[in-house]
Picture: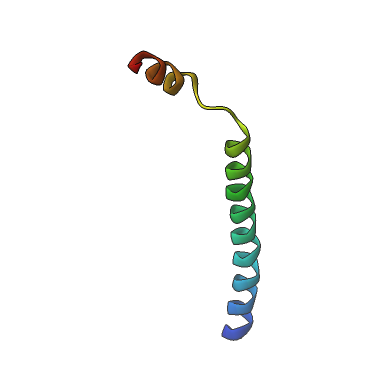
Length: 48
């Protein structure tokens, strides 16, 4: 019975971990596609 509960929890945690991993990877992909923030560009432009 304890083994059945452990397997059930493990399956649920696998789904949750996979969902979190997908969200993190999606955010990295979106961040790499977006240009630099305006604040960073203004700071670099002022240095020259």
